[in-house]
Image 1 (tube, protein in one colour):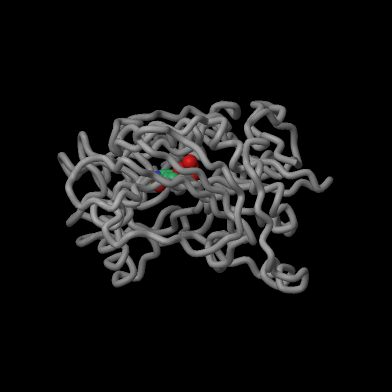
Image 2: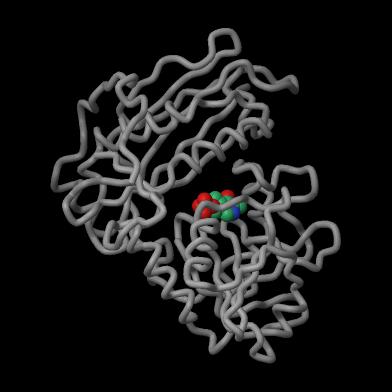
Length: 367
Ligand SMILES: *Cc1c(COP(=O)(O)O)cnc(C)c1O
């Protein structure tokens, strides 16, 4: 467990003059839905090409004024992150591998020609905001405070070049289970018409543009009775990449597993890397290698593929019960949640909520 060492003290706090009452907050926390309610404050920093980062503040949550010519509204020069704050049984509040998110934010910034934010500011904003809004970190099982840092181009200029002014914000939303009905297996639409990323593109950066390009396929998924989209590689259209916002892992009947490698076109998930470690700790042989769609579809039919799961911070691990494409539909296993999936999910969340030893030093105390 890492001690809390960051730049929270650098953030000036302007308390919200009209915070929600205790009763209003408790009502929100009683039924947290993903990403709909936000806390009373937000953290922010500003950047200009001449002066770098300044103006570190925690301010009342509220509207942002933008010039209609602000570059982000036209050219989508924007990146974001997602992580969570967890309340432990002793009421201390922790986050999970935040340095990995800070480093990924830096890599995303480079790819989108945005300024790099010092990880001290990234962590400082998180600590300063969670301190101010600590009452918003829910205590129920599987609940947490979802933290959403993001950065975007604000310069009022519709010529095409990297913006000379940028804003960073951090907002926070109390959340329960990502899926409204708890951990239930999802049906996946295998998308062949569009791709979320290609070689040299922005697939490995966490940027809003990747999501914008994936909305149409998400609609196809719903139209085909599926909840999520699985993308294939853009070069051959044969190999699994990832879901719109989650990585994917396939578990075989001999107890081995495979997941697509970090090749530049998929997002390097913190959840993915944590799960690979937990699987390795159990002696599970996990290959990071290209995984052909045909191998998974045939394997689901023959029983060679025992489990498939998707993973990411928001939903942690989601069993995949069904894969559907233009010309096939297969159940994975018996269509229910896989045993290994649920067991690793329990272990990971036990670490995040401080219920078992954190042997890899992943958790980071905020309060
Ligand atoms: C954020 C994200 C993930 C999951 O990353 P985590 O760090 O595990 O939350 C996977 N794929 C995409 C496209 C993402 O944006």
